[in-house]
Length: 98
Image (cartoon, rainbow, N blue to C red; front, side, top):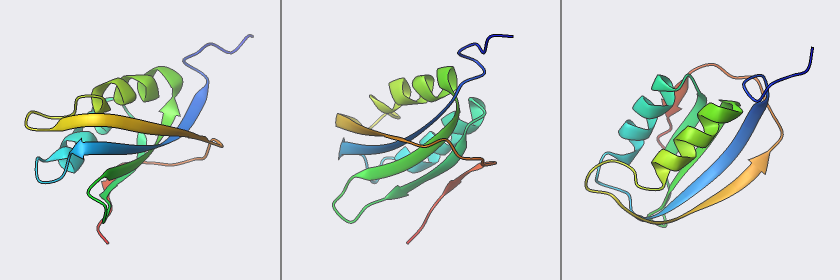
């Protein structure tokens, strides 16, 4: 059986720049990731950006990345930097607080 895109797992680290703190970006990202069945985390960074790690089926990770390009109402995303990471196992999606 040949694996499909649905079977392929992807793990990405995202750093989102712009007006992304104080606009419910983390909570909205968590909701969207859970809706898509993804695992990972999201947190604010001291430089004003938001960082997330997501892992799951390739189409779902791509859908979250597309969502992160605009974020929730009130956000103004300037850019998203994506780093590919080795696949990992994970369950659930959480907000990380430092």
